[in-house]
Length: 489
Ligand SMILES: Cc1ncc(COP(=O)(O)O)c(C=O)c1O
Image 1 (cartoon, rainbow, N blue to C red):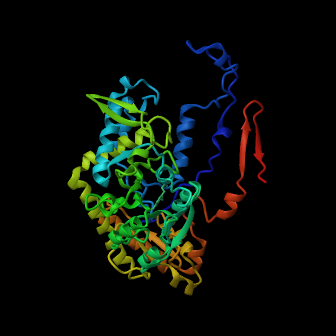
Image 2: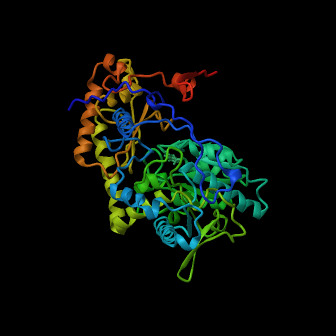
Image 3: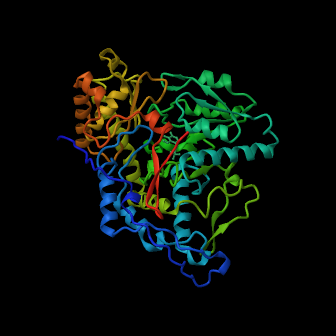
């Protein structure tokens, strides 16, 4: 199959628009005079077909999970069932206002309450909060809870350090720094935490050790119970980055492994759209010790009624408007109910099988730095490509010409020329085989083609650093019709 992405010469929508003559703002009954607009908004004037064609063309120049496989390791790009989408768009869910009186949103509150309980069971935690808007937001919120705990114990002044393995996702140290901690890296041994190095680093200054299991090399930290014991013996907390929960659903859980607190990315495990830093859902689960610090409001049940409970004296307070990104919660709730307990276990087994199948196939072409069976994702090294004058980046760009998305590249950083792949349970064997063949074709291509790729996409190889540092931005003044280029410093 030859891949050719659409190439439309599509202007910004503002260039297709006519200026809309300003009209007096409509008087909305009940809105006091002082809050009314003096003048109507200057909406661009466009016909429906113009708008539909514009966005259809743009979507044809894009790539998404609905167009093909998206093997991004660490990011878990699952296909999102359209049934969940339909449910989330039903007026009863989509048109609820966050500040409606509780008595009018009993159904939504009940769903959120039930989802919290399901997630508590899945994670093995005491309580769950749906509030944070993304994984990184969940990390930051959890670390504020850890801080609140040590403040209460009178240990905050000395517990200033957060330890992280060198395989940690970048958001972990970023969240720890933003929460005011000093971060310290723990080296890995054969892809897993070096227990001796961890023990040597733990001290009365340690507030928390942040870990994901399986880790970002796709390996299960088999010494997790020893890790948990060592962290707790130092009086510190064990934090679970639940982005990789997809690998262990229904098989084990962070509560059983000794973790005190965790964030989950609903978008990675329970098939909801990725938030791009939010609006996602980075729910948090906490054991008995840290649960009292969860953000308010908590969803409580009194008799048969549900309500938002702000009466939590130890809570760190509010981290998100209303009760989180409800649309995502609803999609995840539908996903969990549709699968059931055995179905969720099957999700993980299938994700792990997919990963090992593909690792075995691609491991014949590129070195695999970590040989044991992997969980839901695996790492290859593109180092041998250097002998032909090309790099992992060239292979990733060449894959785009095959009509697939590129894997994650140059992460984890401890692997030279790393490629990190994850094809979750929603991909069939047929897709895995087609992907492996696409990688084979890309590897067999000439260095010239690899370096020139992509040539079949709407956009060729761009200077990504320059695009970020010197963006070309413009806007149109709808009163005069003039296009204005924004000068960037
Ligand atoms: C292991 C891991 N932790 C945390 C995050 C952060 O999640 P989010 O992108 O929702 O902020 C990611 C995202 O890719 C991840 O892979």
